[in-house]
Length: 112
Image (cartoon, rainbow, N blue to C red):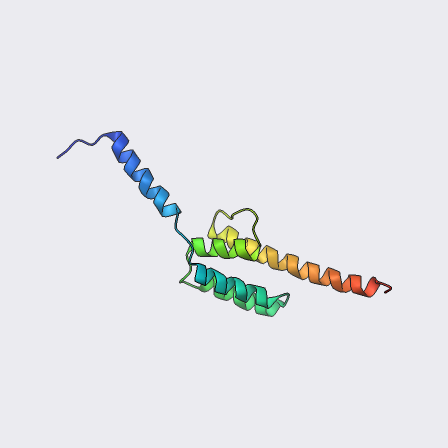
C-alpha cells in the first residue's frame, strides 16, 4: 500500500472534473435541431411540438441543448445548464412571436 500525496490526488481529481465539463456538442444534432426550430417561425403549435420533442430526446446531452440554445438565440451569453438553455429557447420564441405581431400592427398603421 502506497502513500499518496494530497496534491497529486487533488490534481488528478480536478483534472477529471475539468475534462467532464468540456464535453463537445454534436454539431450535426445541433444543426438539425436549430433548423427545425427556425423552420417553425412564429407558429406556436409547431413550436410546442418541436420543443416537447427536444425536451424528451434522450440522445441529446446537456452540451447539445446548450449549443442548440446559443445557435437558436444567435449568440449571447452561454446558458449554465440544460434547464437554462431550454428556458432561453422558449424566451427566444416569445421574442420572435412578439416581433412578428409588432410588424403586423405596424403594417396596418403605415399610410403608404
